[in-house]
Image 1 (cartoon, rainbow, N blue to C red):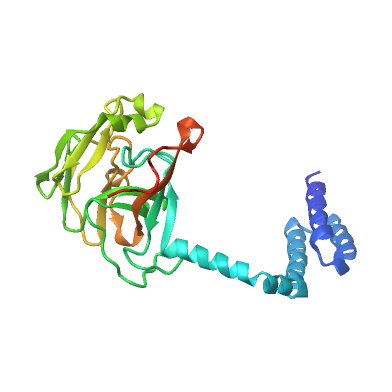
Image 2 (tube, rainbow, N blue to C red):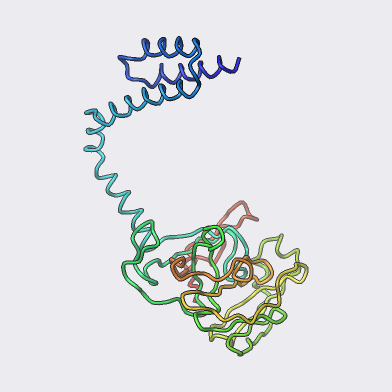
Length: 288
């Protein structure tokens, strides 16, 4: 029964995808040989060989050359647009709350991809060095753990010594200062986050960039860490939502080559709690 199903699939592929002048004869020959005891490996080798003939026939056809000629402008536009987005500037969707309250789920952020060096499109190969990320900047990078693109804040550059003590950041021995943040910020958060009794604080002093952070008392997270000295070519990053962020405490330091852009502003934001309707007052809002 299984051989019948396999042969039926093979013949179906040959009859529909083989070159027109060989379809019927080849289908009969292949089926007959397979029924006489030829192996499945032989069968699929013959099918692939036949389909490769069709591929070559298509690549050499006048029709394909005509399509390329007629649509070369569109193809050039697509290549240039994708290259621009890969190497110069792009936008990114924020799917999680790891950067609350600075970034919200549903934000679309503008990413400057050439500020840290112009790259060969679609690669990590730098053509120009650019400048290095600075403490306090919100960066976009490929996770050293699994390659997924993440957005976090730089808190440690090469040579810095970083520590956390009860959620309080310490950079090169300087403790950050904390003051209560504006409670109005909490109203922007998703309902699921507000249900965890979040607290907002304004963090300053450790590296000169004042910004809000979020703590979730009902959620466990690594609140004490280090001290750790950042080696050359590496960066220590944290999410502003300290109790719900997969950052350098868990995935390790971020290599310089993995950092491909700086998040500069929120272009537009859509609220998942309100059927993805646009949020008010989050149009081209700068992050600095």
